[in-house]
Length: 81
Image (cartoon, rainbow, N blue to C red):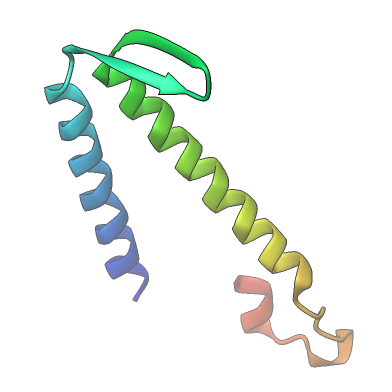
């Protein structure tokens, strides 16, 4: 299962890199009242980075809500992850 996850992450990363590299022409970007002409590559990288950070924060908050495992229930598997 670990290899499948790693393969999926690598495949999605490759798709993202190809998408970013192929889209370098300038586009008009707007955020609230701010508008600017920026390279599409910059807009794509910022969007991907924002999505990564948002996903990381959601994962961290989700882990925080989990109940800790009592010390008596630790096993060797728990230590290996």
